Image 1 (cartoon, rainbow, N blue to C red):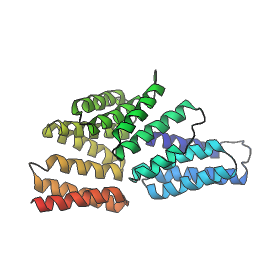
Image 2 (image 1 turned 90 degrees about the horizontal axis):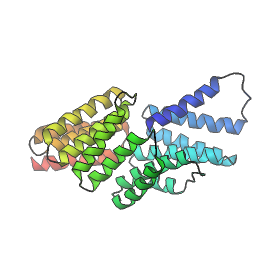
Image 3 (image 1 turned 120 degrees about the vertical axis):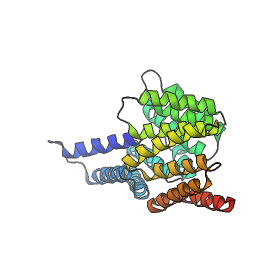
Image 4 (image 1 turned 120 degrees about the horizontal axis):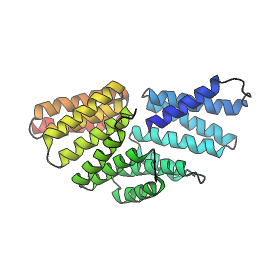
Length: 277
């Protein structure tokens, strides 16, 4: 999904640099500039500001009766809200967004909706959203790997560790040779979580560290913090001191990046393991 925002940014910047080109009306130009700035902020990990810029862009598009622009920026805004841990806000945005009959747009929306529902613990609702997304992702679907990852998350939420591992492994196989390090990191994180749920702490730790290496290289604060949280969970039973260190690192990253939801989780984990010790 980060790749999609990067593509939007490239298209917007390319459009700005191409010549000759008719001059956009001032209001349309302002809307596109807000969207482009939001995409830049998102790519830099400045999610809160990105969310504000996408909201501004959606409002500007609405003022010129551009339904496509409104819907596109609502999707961008929903992605930003998900990263910030605001799953309910993301879901409300998606429920109010019309795909306009565009199958690709609808697929994005169903996948984002499934993410929000999983974040809210609504596994039954997420299953419905995933079924809709799978129906739209036929043939050589570019979202196949992402769908496998969402289905891995769903299986994990339903305590089906073996199914989760199978979907995450399928995603990793589809990502081999592709220039999509962010999704590869997601795949390793889910493999780690599935292995941990299945009682294989040793291999789970290897997979979690593989995810952390990728996310550090990409400088993705939200993912790095989640990697450290997972490492703490894996180490918690047999190495509580190391787990405490991992939770502290998750907390430091989340606080520095302004990730309130992850900060609360990491702070609680640190407190719990402190009491355990």
